[in-house]
Image (cartoon, one colour):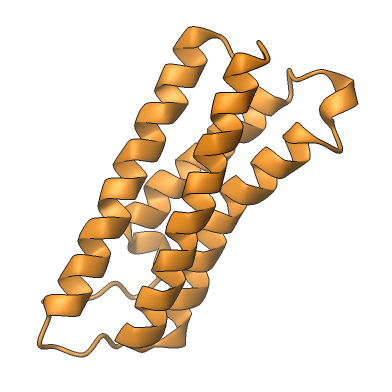
Length: 130
C-alpha cells in the first residue's frame, strides 16, 4: 500500500477542493443580504471539509487521521444541509443543486472508503517525507 506524500495527492481532498471552489462560485450569486448568513455558513462548512482532511493527514497517525476524516464528514453533512436550504430558498437552480449534491455524495463515499481502508489496514499510516 502506498501513501500520498502530500494531502493534495489524496483524491478525496481533490474532489473536496473542487466542491469548495464550485460553492464559492455559486454563492457569489446569492443575495447580498446572505453574505453574513447562508453564504458564510456554506463556504465555511465546505472549506472545513478539506481543512480537516489536510490536518488529519499531517498528524501522521491512523487514529488521528480517521478522527479528522470523521470531522470532515460532519462538515460535509453540514454543507449538504446548507445546499438544501439554498435550493429551497431559490438561491440555487435545479441543475446547480444537483451537480453540487452529486459532488457531495461522491466525497462522502470517498471519505467512508478511506476510513474503512485505514481501519482494516494492517499497515500503520505514515506520511512520507518530501
